[in-house]
Image: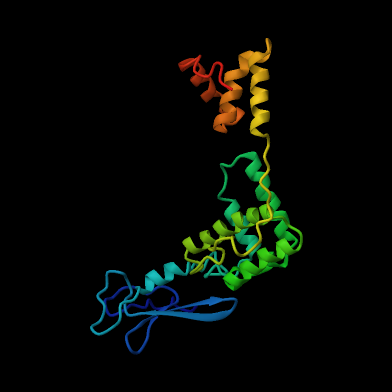
Length: 249
């Protein structure tokens, strides 16, 4: 029966972990694999508290580098996390958005369904350049998608890629650009109601025997942009100053 492998230590008698070694020049080395191919990181220090040898350039310690690449022999098949696809990144990002409103959730699902029909969805995030991101959004518009749709898609992809940057998986967010100048804003500002129509409607509410009791509420909605769901605010205003809005049109 073969004996247990000998514990390897450095000059300070610290135990070296699996994949760690010391080169002939004294530099620490860590070896790991991605898709079967070996990769290496090096450092003159094993731990962050180690003193940098005289004359050597500042660098992260080997163990800091190990943490940076997210190495985990037991659970990670992709230590760098760069081989996941755009679709997988979006799915991971949306998994963090648990406290969202139903309408927002619907928008998320819309974006996911749209992406599934695009080859861009299967692209590895490490291969997405800023130009790729711009060209993808341009393609969406050329395919007949409205500006608002393109903006919604970018509104998911941008924070998703930023999450990858924050996780130290990517160095730069390829969607970190302004949308203006990349795609044409073909949206049209619609006027829901003209000022004259608003005055006539308010006058009708004010003079009507049945609806006059809602005049203050309607007035506030018109002039503040509050939604019906903010009715608790309206009620508070009415209770505080019940006649402030009476007779205005």
